[in-house]
Image 1 (cartoon, rainbow, N blue to C red):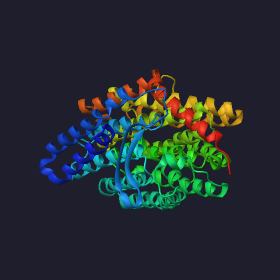
Image 2: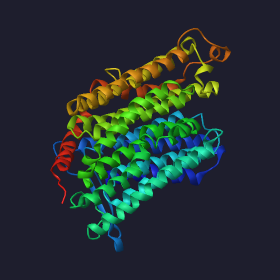
Image 3: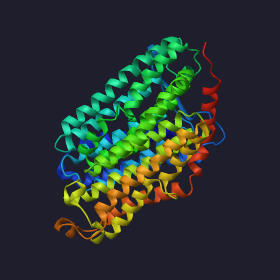
Image 4: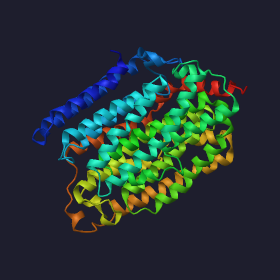
Length: 491
């Protein structure tokens, strides 16, 4: 079995095992088994970095086996510089979430942990799939464990949020399925994604395909105006669900634009780039302003995610190396920072059982160690130089300015809005005198929570101070994608 198969199926196998062994009287053993599965799932991704060859845009660690012979469907895996980093990122976030959920989940622990491990393997499958149907199966299958995580362990309106999440994302994906079938017919019966990249398609066909993929991927990002499901889901989801949703699942949609929309419909992508840029700037500016007036911490960070992901799609559709690489770096950085923000809110919620900003004030007086971590993550969310949050945004702003000064100027306003809503929240929650008895009785983070915060802090600082390992991996693949998009002409 290849390394990518191990990365996919190791957490899934442990997840299925957890579902089988099942009762809450074995919760302690279940937690340790879940941690073992998550750690092994992460460890098997580490040799990928050592074996990844720089300077080539070819797919690496390729595995291919016949799956459904009648329709020429293959179990076909591989990663290039565009998809590589999302494999270890997904596995790393899974380890973090398992540790963070250690005491927060007390009922149906085996099902909760099992769902997360299965979800982890499925998401890695999305980033690794090189067959259209295999991609679609993994892409849709991720909905099931996340739907259950929200619907079973979520808040008071969890059923509403779970249905909204499922329906929004499923409906968009149905148009993508039609597009995949069309490409299968046009390619003479192949579901190979690389083959689709070389198809000579008419203007009309490319436009239809572009919007079919847009329907699936824009909802997943989520782009404005199809973002409305995200705040509701984040508010109701358990802390671990919010962390994985923000850190990884949103990236599935953005990744789809690079793997499908731009290389398969390059001319339509250029033709409709103005629309993508406009929607991205609305997300960056308008949604940033919406975040500023939120009273619920989770909802504020949810809107913040929409604004930050607007940077990603903006970077992709300005079609230069700085923009696309910056968008990819922003995806990875947002995985660390947004996960850290949601897990920080979870630490407070576990103690006070409220996400309302007004319920806090002066947390620094009783939780100084935790406040230090929260400050670092808040600074990263603002895009402070030296943190992961700065690198991608800065690259996208440079790329946007290179393409058009006014687009660059508009995108740079996000740094102002991001600082405004993040620091405004931080001031009201953490600074000043202790606001009430609940805050006065708070206890600082324990050793398990300190471990989670430390791992995320190391990731945020390491990427912010030395992003070269990330950019070196993606540079050649990004250049090849842009060359393909630029050279392809309409028939």
